[in-house]
Image 1 (tube, rainbow, N blue to C red):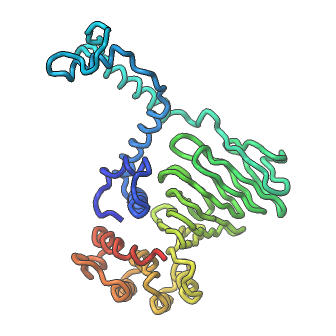
Image 2: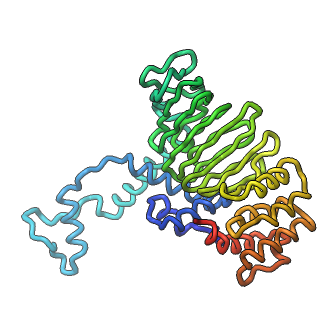
Image 3: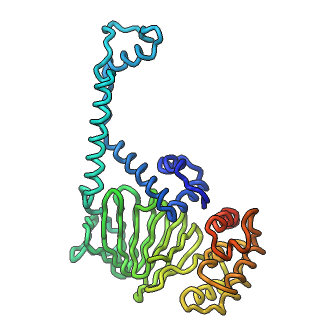
Length: 366
């Protein structure tokens, strides 16, 4: 994660001009930094607004006025038979008025878009993949429309695919129940009450969410599966990109190849790579959800270099001697970089933690 703000990169990130590694780090920074996230929202909103403006060919007189203004001798750079008249918009008083008018138009458009409760087409297209999925009490034959507030349900033999506005798609597995909670320019949200879905989203962060009984999955431009059992426990598996799992003040950022479980009333556990040993994963689950601190030593004893993802996330979740043990094992697997001290890490100094994480991330990718 970037230790400093990423204001200079938000425009490039919005336009997909960064390298995959930079894009991932910016996305992760945006999760935890309200200031940068707010600036990113403004950039994204401006880009969307600009995309809706019509393209109008400029009149010849405007280009001639620009040529005259640029030529030091007052002669146009390109010969023209038209009279050398500076368009009225080139005159200072009219130019200022035009700028004010444009500002007002953009301002009113921004206000309208932000206050609009839902997009014009407040619903998502649904395609039947197998069997007989239902929207409410109506069967989906080949295609259907899922409106805000409606439930889509599949039985043992049915599957469906939802088109999430213009940012991606979600496949709904058998025995699944999902509801469209919201769809508008700044937020698209599903509720997964039970079952399993697979999402593939191409969008900036803070745009697509899935609510579950034990947490909220926030997409960062990726692909993942999310399943919820009858007790409300959920399991997230990320295949590309990053996903943030959140509940109240508890949050886990989960990268590709990793998974994270959540429990009602507790929220997300500590993320782990799925190729970690069964002993490691079992002990970690007991630390997260059973509050069994005796399992910390088992987690540490079975940690590999790649499992520093888990150990770094575990630091703020344990305290006292357990945090000291986690630090020692983490430092042995990947020594902290210059400027990151034992005392600072144990006090959870965020700058030091972020600096160390940048070093650790080099070992997380296969």
